[in-house]
Length: 507
Image (tube, rainbow, N blue to C red; front, side, top):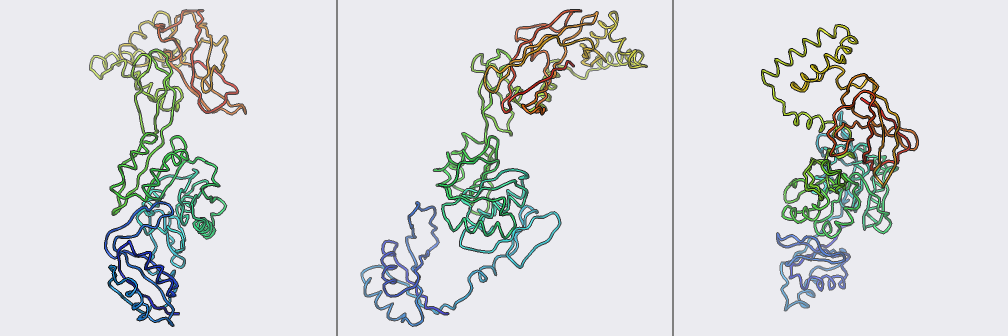
């Protein structure tokens, strides 16, 4: 079926009146378009904001007379600025197929294909997403959507939960699942967008892993990744709500932002996220960041507990609020074991202030020679290192060179004679233990290895503490005499698990 299409240009102030009049004359649809190059962005919710110079376009059935419509229109608005009348016959067509002539397969980050039905792509190592145009926004052709798809394809989403805030067609939620995400939650104010998301999820065989919500239906589930491809103004106005959706140290991806709006949007989120520089595509950009988390760290100087915001991208320094001492937050006992160990190794090396000087190399060679002679048999060598006559010399060589002597740090004859682990406050446990030196010679203080099990008996943490950590801050003790008992009492951060049991080993 063909149609008469007529258009006229006017000031924005009378565009609504023209629209109403054309409808009275029998127009089956009326559309506003820009008659110049000035864009209009971000109307208020419920507001129809139009251009200063607006082209009003109307469709009439073929039985109508464009000449009569023109005459009546110009009679009614003779005193107004109405110009550029245009009329034509518009042939009917299937708009989806017509639009798809310009929609070709797109590849994002060499990993994610997006293509319409009938243009399938099959390349090893890639993921395919089938999408046909519909009533909801989001096919990957617009820079704002493309920027988000590029981020998803370039980052590891395996096993993570995702929220698509303002989902439109659901393309981002579907892409996340296809790329390995555990589950996705799609939110939109438009019911049609939720229908489109469900249809696209079904078409790509991921409907079981995607749930859709109107905002009032969503129960504030938090996720590892939150994608919000809307506009700058709602991103700023809804920043508190969006922030709450991101897990601590989770990732936030924001799009629908003009390049000149990037700074204002980024600043809105900087209090809670470590934000990266904007990624630009044309006049649009993408912002991304990692959510900070609150940790409580123990000052190594005065043992005061401080609260600090950090992200997993940072190795921040904290300043103790009590004694003003500065220390690295990643040495906190509630940080990951590998970071703790790495820092202690580095700190220990720095404190010794060792340098590869020729005289120390010579001493090292002398020590190596002594150990080589003594350790033809390992156990004989170990006995040599524990000999009360030779040991002081080996200890001295070790302290001068920084090289460990076999057996020097290994407390073969230490044993634990009692211990307890209690929780004085949430997230912290107090460890009290006593151990004794059964050797007939003085031994250096051992390292203490603590393994923690949850209430189901599964080990979830294993940490090794040096004497500097488990002794009081004023203690200068470095060794234990024969038959001497040592009592320790110190606080350990255990932020995320309930402890059901523990074991102690001396190293």
